[in-house]
Structures are given as C-alpha cells and as structure tokens.
Length: 156
Image 1 (cartoon, rainbow, N blue to C red):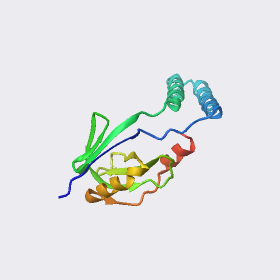
Image 2: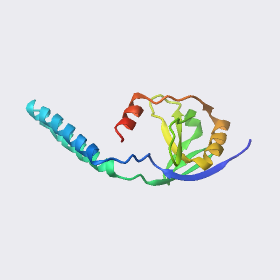
Image 3: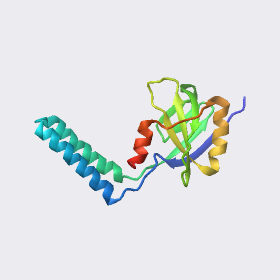
Image 4: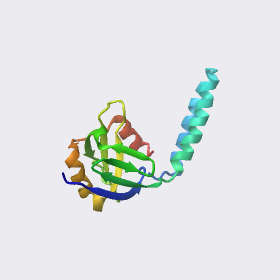
C-alpha cells in the first residue's frame, strides 16, 4: 500500500472583511430583537440577545489563526491537538467557490450526527492532497447547504 505524508498551513476559516454598515446592521437588528424581548418581558432572552451581539461583534472582527495540517494514510491532524482518523470519514468534496489563495476541501463523517469539516489548502498543493484523499475516500459532488449560503451572504 502506498503511503503519503502531506503537510501545509492554512487559515482556520475564511475571513470575510466587514464594513461599518455590517456592524451597524447587526447592532440595529439586535436592538430590534432586544426591544421585542423587553416588550414581551422576556428578560432571559433579552440577556441572551445582548450576549449574542457582543460575541457577534467580537468574532466578526477576529482574524483567523493559521493552523498546521498533516494528512497521512492514518488520518488528518489539525493543529497540535486535533486528530481525525480517515476511517471516520465516508467521503470528501472540493468546494466550488473560487478563493484567491485557498481551495476548500469538505470532509464528510460516517456519522450523520457530525457536521462536515471544511479544510483550506493552498492552491499549489490541492491536487496532491486530493490525489491522496482519493486513495482512501470517495469523492462526491457537494452543494452548499442553506446555512452555508446564509453564512456567506451575511459575510460571517
């Protein structure tokens, strides 16, 4: 059996720059929902809205960390502490969106209860990584879910 050991660095997620309009939009939406919660005297929900807006503003600004990835015939290692055996995955797909610096590979778990993983790869190494994955997993066509489309639309 042919072995492989591939390593690369990539951001943990795609950072989508946001303008001042995005921040004001989230604040206005949060204020509208907060007003509704207070009018309904649902103070626990109101506290949740305030906390959610603080996290949205904080996470929306945060740049992604650069992570180290290693792919071997045994599995995928992300960073220093996360390992996924390739036996846990049933298939993979290439994300169809054109990114300037990165290609996206979506890995689907055997268990339907676990969400898929999107791994960014440098364009220069993507074909070699796909070749290695094809030795162990089935390649499938992937259509973005409603949540994926909404996330991209909201620039989050």
